[in-house]
Each structure stands twice: as C-alpha cells, then as structure tokens.
Length: 474
Length: 61
Image (cartoon, rainbow over all chains, first blue to last red; front, side, top):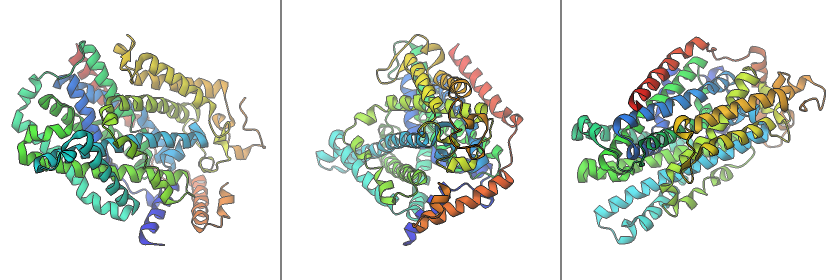
C-alpha cells in the first residue's frame, strides 16, 4: 500500500470509528481556530456581497449577525450528540433519519458541497479572467462566457489532482492556501477602513435594493439564515474530537455563529463601496492595479484551498458512509461539479441556491434536534448507530417520522417563500421562512415519533433487548 | 452486521469492524469520555443572541 493510500485509509478509519479518549485532543481554542479557518471562505464573502447589495451598512451588520447567530444556535445543540458519542455527522444522524435516511442526507450534503465547489471554482475562474485581461491575453481568455468556465474547469482539475493524492499532499498545499484567504480578508478590511473610511461606508446606499425596504431586509436576513443553517452537515467533523461537550458547543457557536461573520460583513461593506456583489470586481476598484492583481491571486489561491477542503470532505464522508467503496469512486462523486462550471448560470443564482439550502438544512435541523433532545432524551445506542440491522432501521431504513416532518417543513417553507421565483407571502415579512420551517419540522417530528410512528428506539428500548420483529411501529 | 463484517475477507474491512467492536464495548462499559455540558453553560450564548436581537430591533425601528 502506498504512503498516500495508507493515509487515506487512516482518515477513513478515523472518520468512521467512534472517537476514543486518545482521539479527543481538541480544546475550545483548537476548535475555534480549525473551524474559523474552514468557515471563512468565498461563500461567506459572497453572502455578504448579496446582503450589501440590498441593505445599508448598519442594517447589513444587524441582519448578518442575527441571520447567522440565531439559526446556528438552534442547530448547535446537536453538537452534543457528536461530542458525547464521538461519531461523525452521517453516523450520528442515523438515530433520527434511519440508516438509509442518513445515506440520503449524505447525498443532499453532496449536492450542497458540489454547489459550494462550483461557486469557489467559478469565482477563481473569474479572477483569472481579470488577470488575463491585464496581461493582454486573447479574447477567449478575457471574456466571462468563455474564459471563466475554461479557467474554472482547469482549477477543478488541479484541485482534483491535489485531493486525489490524499491528506499528505493536501495539508502541504493548505499551508499556502489558508494564509492566502486570511491575508486577502485582512487586506480588504484594511483598504476599506483606511482607504474609504467608516463614515463614508456607513453613509452609502445599497446598489440594488427592492422597492420596499422591509422586503430587502427580510430577503437579506433569509440569505444569512441560509448560511447559518448550512453548517449542519459539517458539525460532526471536529466536535466529536472535543475534550468536553462544553468546549465543542461553545467553539461551534463562536466559530460558525459569530466569528465567520467578519468575512460576511466584509463582503457586505465591499459590495456597498463598489456597488457589485462579485468579489472579483472589488479588487481593482478598492486596491488599484497592483494591489488588485495580488488580491485576485490570493482569492484564486483561497478558492483552490476551499475547493480541496470541500472535495476531500465530500470524498472522505462518502468513504465513512460506504467504507467498502474505493477511493476512486469516492473522488468521482466530485465530477458533476464540472457541469455547473460550463456557464455562469449557477454562479449567478447563488442567492437562490443558498436559500434552498436554508430550507433543506432548517428542516433537517428541526428533525435531528427534536429526535435527540425530546424523543431520545439524549440517549442513543452507539451499537445501533453502527449495526445497520439495528434499532434505527425503522421502515425500510428510513424513519417515517422524518419523512412526514420533512414534508411538513417543506410546505411551511415554500408557502412562506419561494426562493426560486423570489416570491413571498405577506407573513414572510414578519417571520421569514427558514426559522418557522425549523420549528414546523421539529414539532411535527415530536408528535409523529411519540404518537404516530412510535418505534422501540423512540421509546428508549434497544432492538438487541427485544425479541425479533418487535421494532415495528405502534 | 458488525459481526459479519468482522469476518470479511477484505483486510481493511475486517480490521475496521474489529476495532469498531472493541470501541463500542468500551463505550458501553464506560459511557462517554467527554465531560458533559449543563444548561447553565449555554447562558452566555443566549445572552449574545439577546443583544444581537435588540440591535436588530433597534436598527429596524
């Protein structure tokens, strides 16, 4: 076995097995540093860009802080499941969703990750188009419709090669990439603070608000709520390695709920100044020619790093869910990303994408919180989490209560807000959509698991303690 | 299923599930290694949400 394959196998075993005492090495600050490093990405900056196109600086800051912190606090308690039992997200969620249900949730996570990767790669492609224009390259490379997909697909191929070689090569690359995105973030903050001045920024009006300011505010809030809920599938990765439940919970809240907002706010302020939501437009406008080129190179490096993290995370999670499948098949799950890089359509529809994610993750968040805290009363069987014929088999591997709750949460969300058509009901102006969908799914799950599809697992009885076929719903 | 995989002909799967079996037994004997959290520990986070909510209301009205 090569050194790379051995490292991948180690990572698979490490991700699949429940953490033991010697694996629990992370304290509060370790977790904050890792999670902030992962969390601060082009996605946060782009969400900020959308917010800054709709709201003034003061309104943008308030809606970013609230829109990210509250949804995150609503899903953060599930960190206790991962910290207590030392399991990763897709194994931990088996108690609520069932074995097959949790695998289906993995494919939703895959859809999310492919979306994120295509945003990162296309943004890097656009950055290289701008550099190509400065370098005087032929029109094919300097036009958005041809150059950006061309560079984005090349970047995809580079990231694929880096990630395919496993964690040893990836970690070496990250030593350059993570500082690049941090340097770019700090650089833009400095240019905005000292080049523009806070007084000027706070007096600016947004470039593309709705006719009604309340609609601008609630739409911007919903986009940020989407980002807040979107961390759900990533919560198990590091929380399970925490020394204590308290440090895992607090580090999760401060990293994803509070600190990453620095990048979102930065995006909003830059969009206000430049009147464009695209980070590749900001560099020359804020920094001038040379600083602009350096900024675009750092942005490209940062997006390549984000891409390697996302691609590896997707492939290693695939191996955790399906440990018998080969690494090549796991890596092949990233290939559909290329389809989204062929044109700017998906990149330009990022606002709709993040709100669709908001709806899906809000509904799943309500289900898993309701299951772990109110139905299972914080007690799950670690043996049954791994034994795929165990208590969490439910009905054909899926928990009917989760299906019903997903349908109810979907109806709640889409009747309040349609993220694809950007149309809303009058109630959306007062309560938004993601947070009500979370509560609708959670309450429905509780009622269903307690009174409609109540399985032995929901009543605190492990299947191994029962005679055969006694796991049927009552 | 765990027992079946412990007998697998694939060495990686066999070792993985044997290790899993041992770790599950340890969990069942000693429960979790991680220190538990109490509801009082979440008070600062709830206070932060309260402050942010007041700030949002102040900006809106």
